[in-house]
Length: 319
Image 1 (cartoon, rainbow, N blue to C red):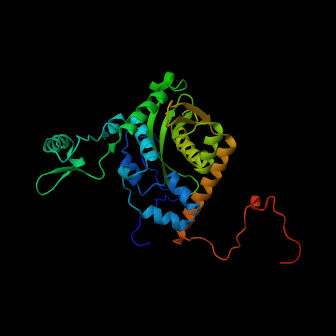
Image 2 (image 1 turned 135 degrees about the vertical axis):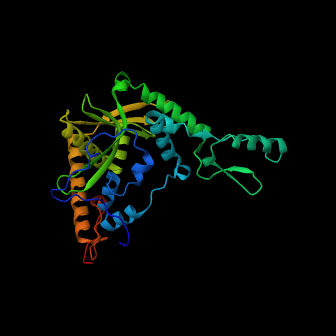
Image 3 (image 1 turned 60 degrees about the horizontal axis):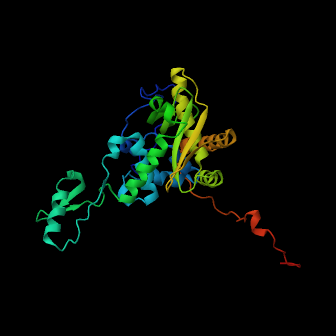
């Protein structure tokens, strides 16, 4: 394992962190994702693949790679920041073209524009000529317009607009799992304490019940939901507040007319997510205690799924 710092575990009788089990507002996103003491739901999902995968992912430094992310991820990131972190959203800008750069006046116009940007977004060569950094938060006009339209839909959604001023956004929670002592973390999109509801913002191509149901199952949103509900109820339990008993998606489409809808996740699905989450926490504690991080088991027989043999007539005779 080398110098890898493992997730923090609190042994029996150890005092709890003072910042644990409360909603932390305004916690920097980079600091949250760089945390190597508390495990997130994404990390826990990885250990259910194999502990070796978890250990490898845990050892990787966090990088804010917005510039190299696929367009879908960029739009999702921008949408969340537009709605919940407007100050951070203000860093995005559309690159200006200034026409044919073989013309002296166009070159100068672009240099003048680059000089107006923050130093962290531009580099200068030996001759003082400016150019955009590869990781500058540049967006296309399409991305900018799309996010503005999607955000307007969410902001005016009938279930959210009347209570918008009661909502808490981008709430970070750290808490200790009572069974394993493992320190956990979560970052909740929207919290409404008055109704005991955690909302999760999702963007998608098609928000129909069937299409989004497939996406939710494939991306294991039930696991995420169980983790977020555990985080919210850790806060409610500490402060004797109203328990959180509802986990809802606000789903908005990435194309015109930018329709939105909402879905509750079922109790059965959340229960499955909690079973999978509990399995991951127990596996993680076992690996931390033993120092053994196994990969895939060996010597297994591959079995095809049942649908493989549908409508196939097996030949007669011996094989």
